[in-house]
Length: 169
Image (cartoon, rainbow, N blue to C red; front, side):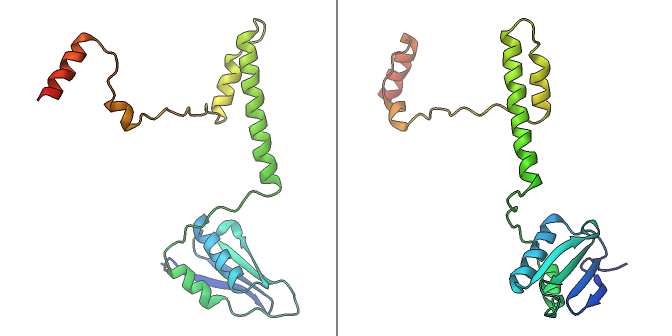
């Protein structure tokens, strides 16, 4: 059985290294490894390979050899996982998120129109939007300030007598 942080160099050229891990790295570990290696050597590009089971580290310029990334890789794999923020969506991911939001808005609009118009059913559109992840916006609850609590408010006579007894004792 191999240790958890074990890896092996699968392919080695002066400007390119392919590393194979024994098991799949978690997304947090992969982001940490990529960030550390690219931050330490700005000339290097790091990308996941083999569905998260490996890495490819390349020099941006094929004529320039890479500095040895293996000691830094050992360091980052031996440390606890750093929880870095998610990268902002780019390209296709951004388009998919925008189209998802547009679809949800359209479904809710059709659901409201279906409830208002007798010829269009609204519930199926609402249920489809709910299944896709739409939830109503939470309403802001008016917070009661401590000053409002101490003020006398008109309440029933029983409440007034209870308040009088409480202030008397």
